Structure formats: C-alpha cells, structure tokens
Amino acid sequence: MKTLIAYYPGKEFPSVSITGTYCALNCKHCSRHYLQGMIPAIDENTLYNMAKRIYENGGKGFLLSGGSDLNGKLPLKKFKDVVKKIKRDFPLILNAHTGILDESDIYILEEMGIDNISFDAVISDEIIKNVFGLSKNSEYYKKSLLLLDRSKMAYTPHIIIGLNFGKISYEYETINFLKELNNFKKVIFLVLIPTKGTPMENVKLPEVENIISVIDYSMKKIGKDHVIGCMRPRNLKNFEIMAVDLGIKGITVPTPSTLEYAKSKGYQIIRENICCSF
Image (cartoon, rainbow, N blue to C red):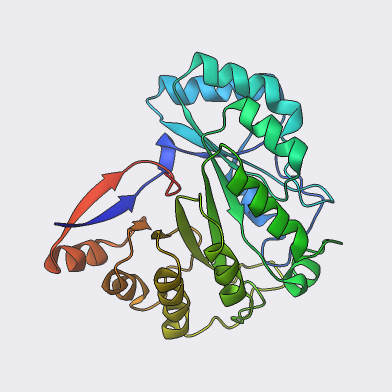
C-alpha cells in the first residue's frame, strides 16, 4: 500500500534558538521574524534544562537553530559540551539547522552526536548576496554540502522555492548539484512566505503549477524521498493535492482535506509527531 507521512512536530519536537532573537544578518525573507517563534536558550544551563523539560513532558527531540553570524554560521561550537551531555542524559533526537560549514564544524557536530543536519541548499551567488547579505558565494554552500556528504552524519538538503524575491531562479541548478551527491536521506521543499515586516512582504509567489514543476523535476532527477516542509504559505490552492498526485512522501501539517484526498487515492496515512527531516 502507498503511504503518506503526515508530520506534526509541535510540542514533541519544538524549535530552539541558541541566539534568542539575535541574528547578525537581516535576511530579506526573514528579518529575524521567525526567531521570535522559537524557544530561546542562549546559554548552556538554559539549553540543558529545556531539553530536560522536553524529555520529561514526553517530547522526542528538538531543532537546534537560531540566528547566523556574519559568516552565515550558527554559533554551535560553544554548546558542544552541553549538547553531548544532553545526548548522554536523555534519549532525544536532535536536528541542527547549521548554516555554512567547514571541516572543523563537521568534526564538532560529529562529536556532539547530532542526529541530523538540516541544510539550506542555495546554489546562487545572487541570493547569497542580495537576500542573505553575505560576502560569500555559492562555492561555500557547495563545499558545505560536499563535507556533509563525506561525513558520518545524516543530513537533509532544504530548498526554498521562490527565495529570490518570489522568482524561480536558482532551484533547478541546486537540484542538479544535489543530484551529484549520494548520502542525504531526502529532499525537503519549502515555499517562500511573503512575511509582513520584511522586504519580501509584498512579493508575488510563482504560480502553483510552477512550484509543482520544480518538485516534479527534483523527484525525477533525484532518486530519493521528497517531503513538503513546514515553511510555506497555507493559501496555495491545490498545492498539497498536486504534491500528493506527484507521489510526495510526506507533508508537514497537511490539511484534513489533503489527508482525505490521499486516502481516496489509496494512501495509508502515517502520523509522526516529529520534524520532517526524520
């Protein structure tokens, strides 16, 4: 029987910011907005006690995230010892949203025992400069992905459709680069949310058919599971239905009507209260 995984991370798998609401960048699609919805844990004791509470309340794990430094990195190194202690003391699953990586980052992440790395795959000098405001280029992102692919860690590339001010511009090149890698588990697709208070609040999104075409291309190009992640507008008409028709493996917080449609097409629905990277 065909299966569709419905992911509901919620309280059992919350997002944690190790920088609070601080970010050295001011990316034009976010403007620090999404940090406000994460649990702040800006020191080791706070992070440990938060992990303890998640475990005691029946949680499965959490996303380690936060704001970037001026090099596009999440400052995880100073939390190395406490993350190792968390992994030792509690059977929690940890996902890290890291940003750009180098060899020393990979070594530290492996030592920490992180279960998965969520990595925004952006093979576009234009977006890195004009959206992220970084003095980097796409070679840094390629190198990060290559290091992950050669490491012992599980990782999941994320592609945000429409990240270039609503235009589809970098997505196909990014997919073609991912095709040359071997060891990631699945591809997570997100869709830009024109967020109020950001420079992108009024951008026009691509037509749903064009968004689906990107995912369809990736599914045909890359022989791995594909999942619709949590970051996406919820008013994309028929988007989830069309994704089901493509054969998408999972959807984060799908609508009830999508689940009914999938069932009518012969899908068994599997509910997972966890991040879609797992």
